[in-house]
Length: 435
Length: 141
Image (tube, rainbow over all chains, first blue to last red):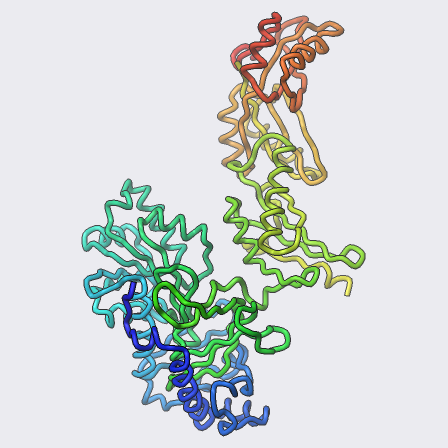
């Protein structure tokens, strides 16, 4: 414990941190208002001026910014510095629509890399380590972020990018990589490949993995820890804010510390926009505090999660966010309870089922019904009706624990769940047909 | 002593059985016995065939959910009361029967029955002690 990149910030008393946040917030709002017409129009429309923002307590007065705004403003509409001051762009994959392009000044790159350096040191990284970065390099922020963070720590950095798994393993063995950074699914794939090649986790030197950029479960954490012989840590970020490093897990492995000196988190009710108290589940909203080229004020991430400020075993005072439990746009309200498909998927994976499922929500009388269809594989199949019904009951009980409501489970043969373009249709909300 | 039964998990919908049996036919798997358990959502198709491992691999390769189960095959006299006396033996031995079905015999005057029970060894011992023939894979083809 006690391995920090910037101990003064990471372990600062809350009052000190608030003072820094307040001071930076005023500057950030002023900077955005003065230099970005889009913000000026939004704030003017809401009747709020930079002078109204006197401290952190005034944050709620600012309007929200959404991904739709970023798309509308593409490519230069939110740029707050002349292009001559910018040194880098990164971009989202554009899987949910138009790409988002983010600009960085040298200062912006620097603070992003600081955030990633904190993440590496939080898992025990030092200049003695060999950090194998197998996130993709390029427009994607994963490679560049951890690469820069590793440089700042002073570790030997292996810029592998993703793919060519046998070469990854060769470098891992020959150069004795101690920390690996990649997506959790790629980590799992490397683990499987090691096994196929007959290499034991004891034959490699990895001690920690920093895994992010996609949702993963505790089950996957355990599997990867076993197959690679390391401790697996989560990292959170989004291209819009900078990339990975907005929040990072420490050795306590119980939630991710948010770099609050650079990002203010809020939790809001996704329907009303109302700010919710600490500990409440809602949509995560971030405000950048020290960004030059691409300041974002109250940006709605659409990630649903919970914030906790508690004494952490690692000594950090930075607030923690739980692993996001879903996207606000995927949320279903069933019998008044918020249900996310990702929660259902988590239960399925933890219980050893495939993630091939279909959720059907309907209404019988005045009651919502929740039916979950899951494909049953040969490994899970035993020959009697009673055994299958027993499995359905067990699964329903596990779902009840996670969701708070009791679904009707249906185990079905493979391929019986309708697919469109090869991807399973996950959610069918039949209630809409009645409305 | 037991024989290997292949079970296939199928949807309870029109055409599902036709589809899987067509696939079985195309792969030249001979069905010596067949039984179906059905519920509202799904069915379990149970088959006895001369090469069960091959049948399992072919069906799994096609993406079906398939398992192999050791079940008892019992030769009983083709006379009234024969089944009742076998069931009485199993009951006296505290054997729980999950399901049973009949299938084609290659011996005149004998009927073959398949039993899925909770304890194959105990059931075999009880039946053979009473002179009832429990068959092996090679006995039934």
